[in-house]
Image (cartoon, rainbow, N blue to C red):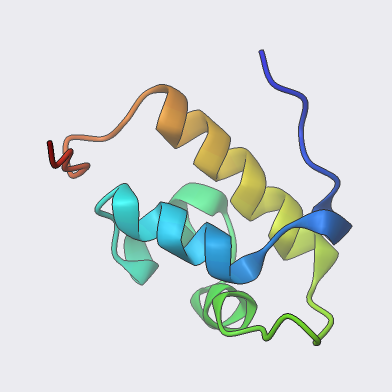
Length: 79
């Protein structure tokens, strides 16, 4: 079991890439994470020098951990 990352230390661009690797569209992932679509969009577009919503970051992180532990059929692995 991994320890959850402090939401303030999350990387929005990294989380975006993890979502893409799962094969999930923005709308699908917003539902999975339990966040509003626009809040997720803003979070993923956050630059490294900008602040972001910690509640959104926490939900995104938890959803990524859950989905990566049990990948959806949309995930594609390239070997």
